[in-house]
Amino acid sequence: MTMRKQFATGLSGLALVLAAGCAAASFPPGADGGSDASVVRVAAPTGDQAADRANILAALDRVRPGGTVQFAPGAYLVGEMIPIETPRITIQGHPHGTTLRACEPDEYHQMELTVSRSTDEDEHWASGTRCGTFMLTGGHVAIRGFTFEYTRLGLLLGCCHRGGVMRPSDGGYRIEENTFRNVGNGIRAMLDATVPSVIRGNRFINVFHALSAQQASYLHFIDNDVSVPEPHRVPAMGYPSFAVAINASADGGICEHNLVSGNRIEGHPIAIRIGTRQGNSCRNNEIRDNTIAAWRVPLPAARIYDDEPLITDEADSTFFGVPLQLVNWSDTTGQSVLENNVIEGNRVTGAQGLAILLSHASRNRVVNNTIIGVAVLDPFPGNVLGRRPEWSEANGSAIWISPGSEDNEIIGNIFDSVVSHAVVLEG
Image (cartoon, rainbow, N blue to C red; front, top):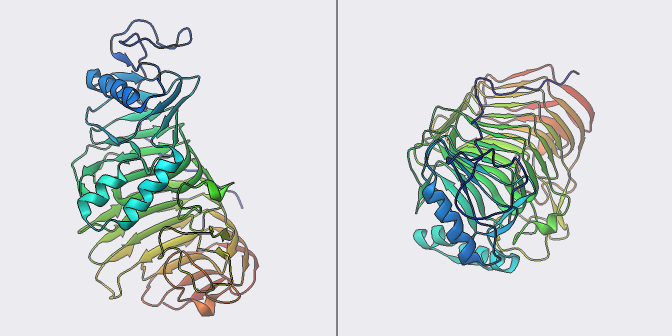
């Protein structure tokens, strides 16, 4: 089968204008592009969180629309998330390497414990943003060339103030050529803008989530590399969760016209999920040409949260998930909508129990995918990320269509070494 790669079109890059600025830092010859005053340089990292944070805030305060914030080489200690409200700017890491570390590992672990125990919404929000880097609310901001470490929220796009309430944004973000390593959420998004935002060419290594979008439209996650070579290095949790999830889970939320394409995802129990909850809708999203390698994930010795993953077999020290999912969590048909979405041209290997799941999802297309090697779960259901599996008759199959799913198109898929059925239709 010929695999096709789809790229977002019509999205011009933001020009990088590198020039002389304010604070002293070490730059290679020619890196500053001359003496253009539209570039603000961040002073070199000091090893002190308060000083590093103050220098970053000072640079962000000086930059104007159309300008660039140029970081020096080395590791900055950020601490609490920094809001970026200035639109049409570029935030650039140094060619010799710039690391943004939100917390130290022990501090991160303690922060996650605080989040897990908090019951007040404001306290939960404040704790969760303690280990973070940037919150982008000004539109058309580009972030390039950084390594992010030990962040619970690495980048927050289009969102939000305490309590997670949406704030207007023009969108148009470009997150390119960064590395997210040993982090909780690499990128979280809450975007209702119609101008596409592009997350392209990044690496996510040992992350809990690469992309978590509570509500998003016109978000393009393209040609990224996501892997978990050392699950125990996922901070605080000790295991990965889903790699990419785009949901309509906020009140009145929508997720429309999003694209997840050309990514390599390896080691996450759920690779890509699009889902909606009661009263919300997800339409016209595309999951195309991704390469997904799945395997069972080892459980850590101790867990911070008891509800994820769901443990049904205490004798098993691993858990699994379904790699590709369209999931409507509403129990009543018609309460929410999950339709006109496309899963096309993906390659899935090594699935446990099931490779592609459509639950209460109608009028979607599953076309020209290649599914190789689906094993039976024994015992069933086993330990699972997400809800207890409903598909016992489909155990070891490639595709399951749930009851309450109607008029889905399943065409041109290739199946190899699938133990049970190619497609199980209960809808």
